[in-house]
Image (cartoon, rainbow, N blue to C red; front, side, top):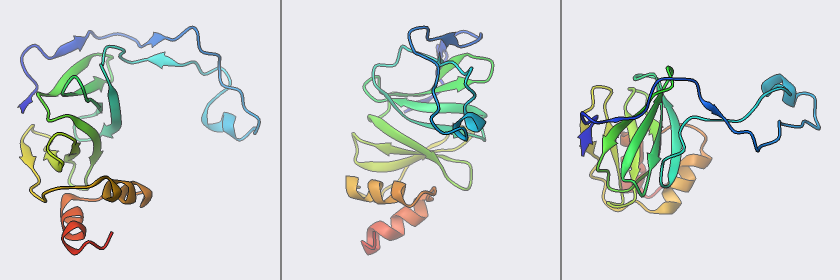
Length: 160
């Protein structure tokens, strides 16, 4: 996999585009407006991904990343509004999270494994072998990010 190729710019710097055909939020509980104000409007950060999923904020790089699964790449939205390819030619990466060390952890659908990308762009395959969907569901239900080491131990012990 290639980290940030030379022609990685997909969207130029600028404000997000408003999505005009979506109604503003309506709150039946006033506490909702403390989180999402009634005047909030939906905006589009980028709409050219083939099949996007797995968004997560990557603090070490200060970007919002997500997978374009069928496009076989991981994309990143920067605070100035530009969108760049973060990782190109992925093995159908379909989920992302960040571990305690600031690495971006990926679920690779194509290879049926986890991998990681360090903040400096180094890619490392996690050789835990076949990782089944049930484990990923249990990880997400745990409501915290697991490091690859924690996942490895649980896979080996089958304690999930």
